[in-house]
Image 1 (cartoon, rainbow, N blue to C red):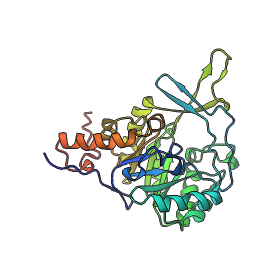
Image 2 (cartoon, one colour):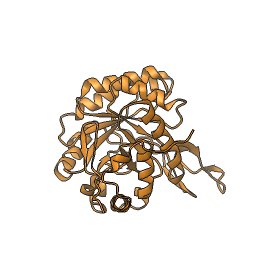
Image 3 (cartoon, rainbow, N blue to C red):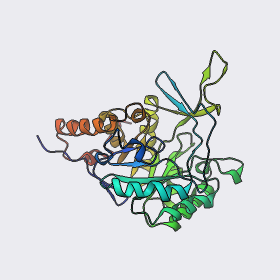
Image 4 (cartoon, rainbow, N blue to C red):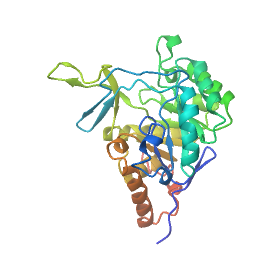
Length: 309
C-alpha cells in the first residue's frame, strides 16, 4: 500500500496536515494544551482579536439543539495589547510545528490593519484570518463582507500592514460568495475561509424567550457541512487561492469532501469543542483513509469532485 502524505502548502505556509482548529473554539491555544496535543495539528486559528477589549454578548452565550449549536459570544476578547503581551509569547514557546493564524476583527475598516500591525512582529504568527462577517459601525451595521468596497478596503488596509499571508473569512449568507472571494483576492488576500456560522434563533418554549442572551446567534454543527462544502466549491472555482473549509466537520470523510470540493485546509469548531481530542482522531483516520484508497498525497484530490451537468 502506498504511503500517504497529509502535508499541505497553502499561501506559502507549510502545514504538516490540513486540520486546523477554527477561530473561537481554541481560544489562544493555552486553554486546550492540557487536553489536546496542539503540535499534532496542522494549526489553529486564534480567538478573535480587536484593537480594544471587547466584553461581548450577555449570557447565556451558547445553547445546544438537536444536531448542532447556536452561539452569540459577541467577539469577546482581551484586546490586542494583552494578546501581544500574554498569549502570543506562550504560543511562540509552546507551538512550533502547528501553524498559528490570528483571527482579526474590527468596528471599522482601519481597525483590521491596526491589529495586524500590532501583532506582525510576533514569531508565533504565521498569518491572519480577517473576520469580515462583523458589522461596520460606520456603515449602519452592514457586514464588511456584504459590501464590496468595504471588503476591499479591509483587505487592502491589512495587506499594507503585513507581508504574512492573509485569509479572508466569508459568510454563507453572501448572495454571491464567489464574487466576494474575487473582491478579496483583488485587494490582496492570499486565501479564503468559508464559511462562518449561519444566523439563527433558538427559543426556550418554557420561558418563551430566546435561548441566548443576545437573542439571535450563529448556527454551527453537522448541518453546516453541505453549506460549507458548497461554498468551498464555489470559491475554489472563482479564485486561484487556497481555501480553508469550515463547517460541520466531525470525521475524516468530511475533510475529504472539502478537499474534493477544492479546499486545501479545513478547520474544526463545534465538534472539537464537544470532544477536544477528536481532531487528532480525524487526522489519524484521514491517514488511514488515504492508505486504504492508495492516495499518496491528499492534495492530489483537491478539486477532484466529479460533477455531472
